[in-house]
Image 1 (cartoon, protein in one colour):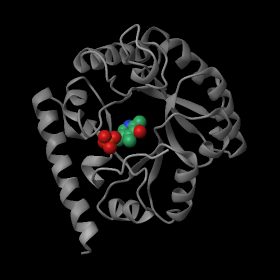
Image 2: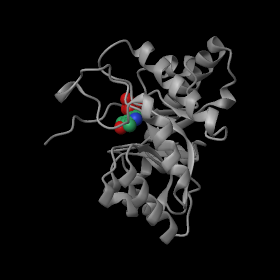
Image 3: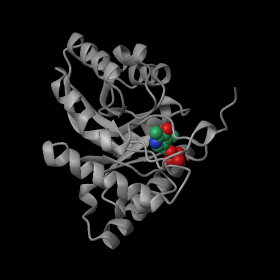
Amino acid sequence: MSERLEEIRQNLADVHTRIATACSRAGRSAAEVTLVAVTKTRPADDVRALAQLGVGDIGENRDQEAAAKAAECADLDVRWHFVGQLQTRKARSVARYAYMVHSVDRPRLIGALGRGARDAHRTVRCLVQVNLDPPGISGELATRGGVPPTEAVKLADKVVEEEGLELAGVMAVASRQGDPEAGFAVLADAAAAVRERYPQADVVSAGMSGDLELAVAHGATHLRIGAALLGDRAPIVG
Ligand SMILES: *Cc1c(COP(=O)(O)O)cnc(C)c1O
């Protein structure tokens, strides 16, 4: 086994242990939780290693990088999750390879993703991104993307109306402001409101390397884990 594969294997085992412990504390089954390995900034070989270790869900946050990696890994049986802020002009490209887009947060993006999906004869699953910042946060401190929790159902309606898209649930990134626990509780409420109208839209994408336990306690079904699996990323320059 190569050194890198061995390193990822160990990290994956640790993450699975954390998920199992969190599920057991929350009285949930680990089978309810899907691990999405976030491979941004990492080479396609890491995706290969993850696939070899049984991880079938891969997350990326930039179209250019994701499209290239998806093409390089076309022989693998993995599903691509787009988890980052998505520009409308990139929607067409993303619709060609994404199994699920986690960051749907405006009507124009829904239209563009729908057109891209129809042209590619695909169905793209969509999560409505909910912004968890407490009121009054702006500038550097603000989380990018997401609708206010009270508008999640309205945007979910738009996804449902768009041919080529399938509403799958909600997603959020924890706010750097305020109590994270309160934030995840707000997300759980938004998820319930969407599910009340669309029972099949049961995905709750929340939780990253640092807060997966809290996310599981608040009902997350999809965890987006990067650093805990693949190591710390180099800081983004420029
Ligand atoms: C990078 C990223 C993650 C993974 O974060 P880690 O802290 O590396 O686990 C999850 N979600 C989104 C939207 C990301 O951009």
